[in-house]
Amino acid sequence: MQLDTNKLRDYYANPPEDVSLEDVDLGRLPRHVSIIMDGNGRWAQARGLDRSRGHVAGVDALREAVTTSVRLGLDALSVYAFSTENWRRPRREVDLLMHLFATTLVKELPLFHQENVRLRFLGDLTALPDATYRVFRQGLDETADHTGMTFALAVNYGSRAEIARAAREIALDVASGALAPEDVDEDAVASRLYTAGLPDPDLLIRTSGEMRLSNYLLWQLAYTEFYVTETYWPDFSRWDFLRAVAAYQGRSRRFGGVAAS
Ligand code: IPE
Ligand code: IPE
Ligand code: MG
Image 1 (tube, protein in one colour):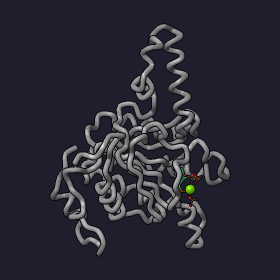
Image 2 (cartoon, protein in one colour; image 1 turned 180 degrees about the vertical axis):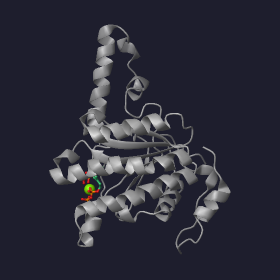
Image 3 (cartoon, rainbow, N blue to C red; image 1 turned 30 degrees about the vertical axis):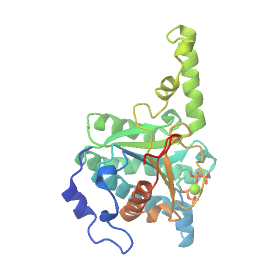
Image 4 (spheres, rainbow, N blue to C red; image 1 turned 180 degrees about the horizontal axis):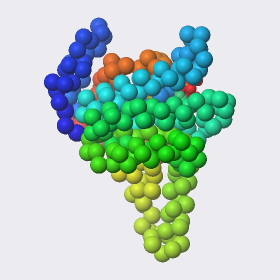
């Protein structure tokens, strides 16, 4: 994606002591960054607030992450917003999150237009409340022609369900004769995942210190670099994003081979 370095320098003016734009190589930025946005509840609890306040604060952090990704010229940003397991939470919290997704999307559509961002969703949207589903469809339709960054929101997403669904589709295609068994290869699977057409993430960020995937992108993260920060999601800023990118650039990605010397 096009990198506007003047805009980027403005965006990263007034750095804190430990990190600045100079710490990253703009010629070697990741193409696709994915984030497990975790720690909203603990952020709120640490302030004596209801968990819901953490989710509301998390929206601001997400808006900043989208803007940061656009400024960095990423091809794609994907974020985990609601897992297939998150339905186990209290009804009140689930309702609030579904409502928050819908109202936030309506509010942020102008930003997507302004920044030419194309929206897509990862997950089974059919199980969502009608009002949320309708807004999601509207977001998809209104941004379908945008040619800038892809922003993928994982909602009612579970990686095992995603892979099982791809297997089911392959079985149906084989049964109908549309696909030969010997043509069932990695591409056949990848093209039936919710992420079809997106490059695999180069960098996965998880906030709030948890060292697990929680059923997120098990297939797609095969060779992704992981970065875990103790920072709770609502506090995650453009500077934390830069720290993650700097750490990513310090890694030696070998993809099973040996390091180039
Ligand atoms: C992440 O924050 C947001 C969602 C899963 C929707 P949490 O709500 O998981 O916050 P913690 O992990 O309980 O602190
Ligand atoms: C993962 O966070 C899901 C999202 C961030 C949407 P959770 O808070 O649900 O994960 P666990 O339960 O700690 O593994
Ligand atoms: Mg959590």
